[in-house]
Amino acid sequence: MSDLPRKVEIAEEGPREGFQIEKNPIPSADKIALIDALSATGLRHIQVASFVSPRLVPGWSDAEAVVAGFRPNPDIHYTALWFNAAGLDRALAFKDRLHLFGSISLAASEAFSLKNLNRDRAGQIEAMRKQTAAHIAAGVPVTRIGLQAAFGCNYAGDVAPAQVMAAVKDGLAIASEAGASEAGVTIRDLTLADTMGWANPHQIEAVIGEVRNRWPELRLALHLHDTRGLGIANAMAGLRMGVARFDAAVGGLGGCPFAGQPGAPGNIATEELALLCAELGIATGIDLEALVEAGRLAERILDRRLPSAVLRGGTLARFRARAA
Figure 1 (spheres, rainbow, N blue to C red):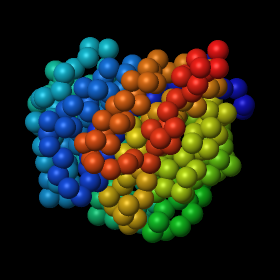
Figure 2: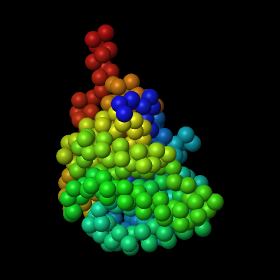
Figure 3: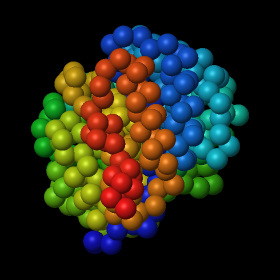
Figure 4: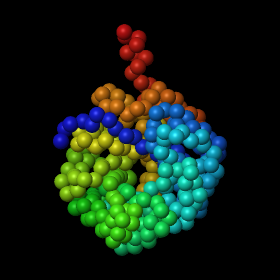
């Protein structure tokens, strides 16, 4: 497939994923300021916090304060991340401010699951069974499978498409066991994550092709890291395959704290992806100039440069205006 989508949805994960990996504590007020700035850019999906263990992820020990503090825009789905029943309970306290949905989170690499969550494949499947049941009991719909390390793993090496297919089958089996749509479990979305930056464009095309041939009803999304500078090239490969949903992080914030590669770049930069889409004539609904300003705010908050090339070079709008 080579038809580009007419419209792309970008889910902004910079606040959640970015601040979790910073060595120095970030004041809650600064986190809130960035969320509010992003809320004025035209984004429609922003992940604002992680309800996770403060011991393991101290950068989100203030999750409640941040979620309570930002100014919600009614046109935006604000989401959060959690991995267990305790995190779900914390999120439920903010159901008036957050768009809550459940995910079945698995990994195509068992080695990464052990490093990330201290669970082997069987342990993570059992944990997701229990978490799915907890979501159903709380009235939170389970609509998505998120698959980490879908293209490679720093601990186990290359990940074959067959491993991806097996993990997706595991996720769909968990959903089926939970009772399908009657019980609030209807899997519509599948996110394939290049958690440690192993993907290349050919691999993106191959994995998406196999998954789509087997499960054409699933809406695919890509969560791409720019660890080795191939993030935007991989996004382009996804676009050529018709993928219309991407995760990204303003300025290129973030990175996985359990990838064993400190200091590596994080997600593809939201403004780089938005610029690519704009240049290709793909609608995103994003005010690119406002997004760049939000990225520069993130740099001021962290007092350092972020990886985004667009924050250095700017957009093309003023150069086109000058030329005209």
